[in-house]
Image 1 (cartoon, chains in turn yellow, cyan):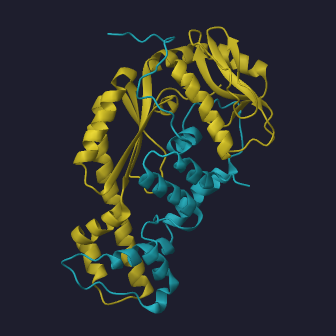
Image 2 (cartoon, rainbow over the protein chains, first blue to last red):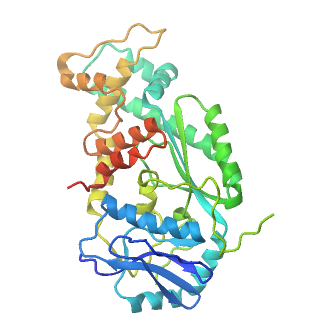
Length: 244
Length: 138
């Protein structure tokens, strides 16, 4: 499908400074479209827009810049309004919801936490502690079915262990957040979660992640990213998902 | 105590630029969507996701797990066996690819990027590594 129209980066409130100079975005300079109390930050959507690295980076650069300046409702990559009139209509009819969401997110940031258990370490743990895997592993048979059976047992044991890591991390960090939201699955990642945190407590949150990292088994790498625009808290589970 | 008003910048000393690597899946899967609007084609990305699921559930993956778990040498178990020729170069691949992700094939670039990110900490180089997973570079 040809993507012409207005590429939408995010929605901000009337109080947002909306400084857009130097923000080029995916298809040209970013500009604002105001409709009553809310303003959308948009740019031209060039034909052939795809999820290429530079386009993704451009999208994020604009959204992040807006987040640094104030509260923003970040759009997912690739949202294009057919024209300005449609956009204005949407902003007007949805104004209450946008404003409610904006005030809910005001002064809050998202922190993303990922836990990557080291695969070699996990495999050793599995061999050490899983009787089923041990038994299958020590069998004499090296036939294809036997190896597949072993592999399946390993995969199941790994999944169980990943869940355990996830439980521990979430239980520890959730009390510091306003809300948390499961992130999309990432290969090799036991936990991928977004935490909505009061901006003033983001430092404390990061410190808690550091503490947790020290306590966790050496085999688990814990990464904390942010503050980020609240990508995870403007859709289902975070707030309302809208259909117009 | 400062009260954060909406118009006041949410800037704190720890705020640093996040790399694309850190936020890729959020940009693609989270964020606000207005259903009436057009969503640009994300063919490359969707394929990557689907492939990952297929690869995870494949016999090949189980064999790789088996092969790798067979190589695990615990100090108290000295009976680690070598695999027969049956697996051919696969075991060779496995032994020199200790740092590789479990997912191979379609998702190896993705996994590699994650692995890289893990070992490089917060370096900007991850940026470049991750780009292989998003189907640009042409």
